[in-house]
Image (cartoon, rainbow, N blue to C red):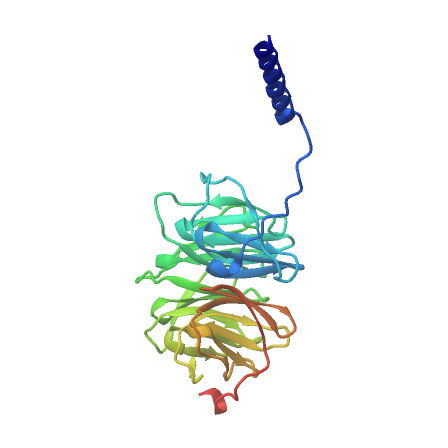
Length: 333
């Protein structure tokens, strides 16, 4: 009898435990997952309003709403035949309103219309791993994306779709960096010191050859008529006639330069290998060394406050406040 009573008691106990286990109840609060950006290579940074957007390896898109103090992963949905994104992303750009575009390997283009909170792939090439390296919006509203082997794409619907642009490039150089101006002009820097330029918002392009044979990784519009191209082993060139003629600018640095930006007060900043930061205070005519010597390669940057930069590179995201520039070489030539 006692044994039977014990069995009944055990059965009741198991039943109570089962009911408790499956009884509906509120879940405990878990804080939003925070990603450590110092563990990712960051290749591009953009800003929409107060929100920072950073892109990098393995398809990561990070967003921050507190000027980079905390970062979280954006949501990436399926699209363009992609169900899981793991391609490295090489650049991101704000292209008007709350729209942002990111480009990367496998010819992928992702689009966000909510300031980077969610993203949808709009283009990909499953049969090819050839990357896109750069993207920007011209003043005519056209969006240009450039990449490997002379690839050039154009969108006239805010990045919802892209079509190839035919350009006569016999050597098919990689097109590494792009800058778009407010007057419809755009310029692309590429391998073998080849530069593409457009005066009509990217509808047509022509090529110019710089007095140099190495790779160029980027270009910045330094002033209304001043453009600066930069690249391998610290080579920097400037033009005041939209590429008809170029002159080399001696910077005192021999490290490769991968990224550039212009600050609100008109300073031109170049970023590169060995944590190199070069700054021009005369519209890109000469450069001084702000910082050099380190293990990180810097490839992208954006100004988040006067003189305060958010930088991306091999070791993730870092900050720099400008102000310690070594005197530029006289004349910059």
